[in-house]
Amino acid sequence: MSEPLHTRWGRSLDREHPLPEYPRPQFRRDSYVNLNGLWDYAFTASESQPGVWEGKIVVPFSPESALSGVGRAIQSGEVLHYRRFFTLPGDFHRGRVLLHFGAVDQEAAVFLNGAELGRHAGGYTAFSFDITDALRPGGNELHVAVRDDAEDARFGRGKQSKKPGGIWYTAQSGIWQTVWMESVPELYIRSLRLTPCYDEERLELEIRLSHEAAIVTADVYDQGEFVAGSYFKGGRCVIPLPRFRPWSPEDPHLYQLRLRAGEDQVESYFAMRKFSYTDYHGRKVFALNNRPYFHNGLLDQGYWPDGLLTPPSDEAMVFDIATARALGYNTLRKHIKIEPMRWYYHCDRLGMLVWQDMVNGGGAQDTILTSVAPLMGLVRHSDSDYALFRRDAPASRSQYLSELGETMAQLRNCPCIALWTPFNEGWGQFDAVRIAAAMAESDSTRYVDHASGWHDQGWGSITSRHVYFRPVRLKNDGRALCLSEYGGYSLSVPGHCWGRKVFGYKLFRSAAGLLRAYDRLIRHQIAPLIAAEGLTAAIYTQLTDVESECNGLITYDREMVKLPERELREINELLRFEGQE
Image 1 (cartoon, helix red, strand yellow):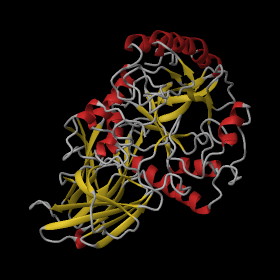
Image 2: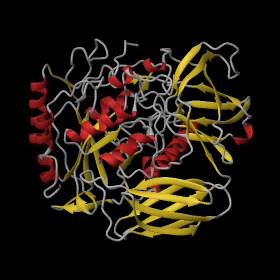
Image 3: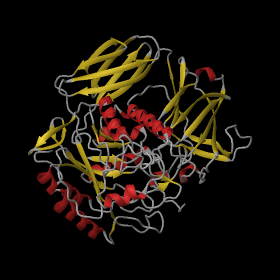
Image 4: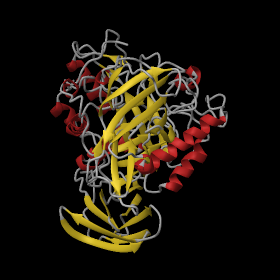
């Protein structure tokens, strides 16, 4: 691995208390113990707890990352072990104690005081255990055993590769999001599902409780002032919200929600907004709150030079989102990754639309299918051919569906998410029509791009195209027309690069040359498609450099924005519908 860069946030990391913020802003209790920090670690050949520990690792950074303090990759067949001792605060225990993991890549077995709590498979989604019965008075020993293989066809792996280069990045493993505990009463709120009904002027709530039905009180506040409320016996309720204030990137207004069930209280938030389609000069286009709205966005890989998949701090996450907004973009396509929940919270409050990709898996990509054939215009292979798309193993297809379901359940309440993408460029694609239809039925409040880039199966209301290496020429086929990837223009900035190798789709030697090329691209190829073909979205590649890939608008260490903010904003003003704010 190349010697990594460091971000300013990584350089100032508190190794004993990294990422201390409450990790789940949309489902918050005042009971909170953060377990991030220094843990014992070891690599062994079995799941049994090691007799000897190798040193200290900074959780939640993967051992492959610089910020972990380890710098060692897990090998196929190895088990990565973590150990942490903790004592509960005196006033913490309220009846039940829950242990939460933001994400562990890929398979985790969790033990407390020698008793197995449970297991989780899938490297990108959150999971938790009720640890009450395994707790001891005084000190407790937490042990996590992890297996991970970036080449295992069963699991989602995203852009991770054991041979990084080009568009593939360093593989990582183990705990990579916050580990934390909370305590709840015996009767507590397990989950919350929020559905803003824009046209009906109401909020629908669906709540699951830990056991018997109980009276739940739901109160809505606007900047601290009571707006509306309801009480109901478990299950569902509707809260009318006449004359509400809509959410948009230009006005990201959030309402606060307070829930009570018995002695349990949960703080949440929501927004009133609507994603739909409308007519624009005879073309179907995206609408936000019943008005045409152009999604002008950036591809966002979510990688960091010192933390890999883990942002080095809360401020670092805010920097990426706020910088994209300042440059004139209203959308981030979260590419083949799931972020910590605080990232989505910052998008919600700062006003950034999100296109959420599912994490791809399956066997090694077929270069002919995913690279050569698309350049030749052969982009409509049937994805019922599982072997062709490297999804011939039933266990791989089953695991993908499990991870997809967990992803949608985890992120469903985030106001910022406008679109789900189950498959990108045919990577591990299978049965896209059936899967996308099921996603749309499960969540009718968002768009579903069933096959981003190519191998379109003809389903749905979106045509999604990727265009690199050639002029952008698109035709409307009656569906909403999205340019879901384009650009890839590259400029390496000495002193801010990952290594000596530089990868990009079109290389430039100066910021002035890059700016002129971007201006020509937008002005002469992309913007004219709005009026001519009803183009409704454009996602430029990309937000930041990632390892050797230098086609970001921001350097990988986040120290330099390559193009001037004012000029870039002026160019981006061209990508909007008439009358759009």
